[in-house]
Image (cartoon, rainbow, N blue to C red; front, side, top):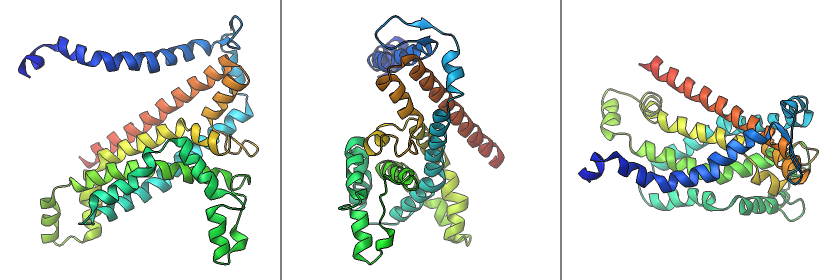
Length: 294
């Protein structure tokens, strides 16, 4: 082990396989997206350089702005609703003394399912005739609450957001739960001796100590919201009336259905840049919060 630590070249050799895969499947496509964003190309004939025309058209595209707004709904739902819910569930699970592994596996289970499977499961749940949700309302006499969930513009986006949250909440719960369980018991015991109640221990001890994990969860939530694609395609395909269209599905439509690869690449570039801006803002706010506490 000491020989490995003393020879940096070995680090490169160990990293090379993973780094090569990352460059091939991530780095090169990103560079190509930036390149083709300045071209008009249908994927078959010769490409034509058009400069910033794709971006000019994009920023005048009403559908793009609608899809961007829907991505903001994803972000708002994941940070303002899902994150507090995940924290509460994690705190409740941390109080369980027996069968912790069973509950941890149970909440994590949806995460290991493919998004296509999750989408199909929730399609059955939301089905207007045989769906679990509507039948549940009818069984308790609340027939008026039964809806055509995914075909109604008022409810379609919420339906997709709930399904997406159901898939990923377990992963976030496991992360936060692990952080909570790693909070030193001595600190809480000292706080109890000093007369701190449960709320004070949560606010002044637990949450500050697990802040790094909360920041990671928020970053993952925002990044996941910005690249949401497959769950939307499986459940609604951007319908009804593009009320569930997000930037990634719009990019997919333009590039692979309408064969406007240059325009689709421009959408991909904008998604990439907006995601970088959001992650930078979150990290900046987290850093300022740490400096303020200090």
